[in-house]
Image 1: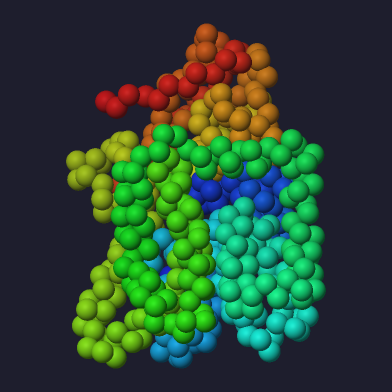
Image 2: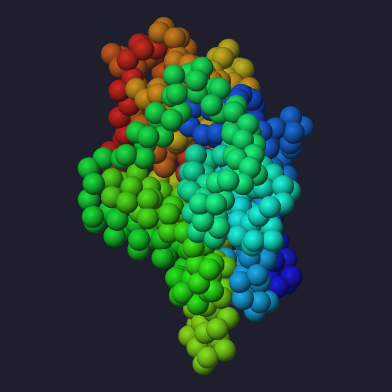
Length: 480
């Protein structure tokens, strides 16, 4: 197993060093430059953890060591759980299934709240497994560790509540209601609440805005079953069929331990249901799949011993190719997918272009802002703000749209009559906003092409804009 983990870690390091920060990565890195008890859209641990490295101005490759270590720690914990369930062979297959899940590599390269919650889910699951033993339940140490892990999970992401429900269900299932007469579980709850107190204090000071935002975000729009089907198909594609063997693994596990399957079932069912409203993103279920991995190891270890080796080997090969292709596209900026005719412009739709060129754009924005005595940067969509906020820092970034988000806390609205450096990007290009719903005037200062492996990926435009109207109505450019 060591060679497998070493190979994956080397791939993560190489990929992390060859691409820029994603939208979400840059957003959470900015948390570390605006330290607070909590934030508008997420709890604070993802920012707190990066703060020492950000304070030292560490490069992207060093910042990405954090998610890489979290992925490694998650894999080791999954291995321990699987070994506890069914022996060493189950541990190997659990880690292999985890390593061949394409989307989990995104969370192993870029630090998101889900990267943290994956690790704490595995740690909590292992600790719960230990506390299901009657010989452990009366000892204070394991309960204190459980409370610590629950609190840190709560500081990572609000969906840690699913892990808390799984802990309660497993321990009550193992020990019955007599567990409630044991003082140590209540101490663990107290430790967890103490750790998440910063989130509660911040929200109490800000009209519980974070909880309100997440509730509205999770509700989505009109519920449609077709959205659920699309979500389920996408889940199989991005996490791979090897992990699906976990469902069989739960049935093959000792009856007393089958409640551990709730670690997958609770979050997955809730998030799949929310997907009907169009509000669930594919990576939100990552902690659930991590929890299913030990059971996948149990099932796969038995299948390969019962003449199923050829089929499993075929799936391993297919998923390995998918992972290699996915990582290659991320590193190359999707160049192999670009149409051969597109050699000059960077306007062909390309989701992998998102990882390249923003550092150079941020540096150019700083230079142009200084030359033209502009004190801020502006964009017309919130998804364009985080990379410029990170790479053009300390310049504040204004988002010129009628939407309330984290950047309203950090930079606020551009004052009426104000001037700024407007940045546009070809992969999400907007009309230059002019009066009455924009600026009095905008002058094109510069363009910057992003080229990868000799092929254009995208283009940036930089405008000096004066006289903001204060009434944004951004309009995407129509396709040519």
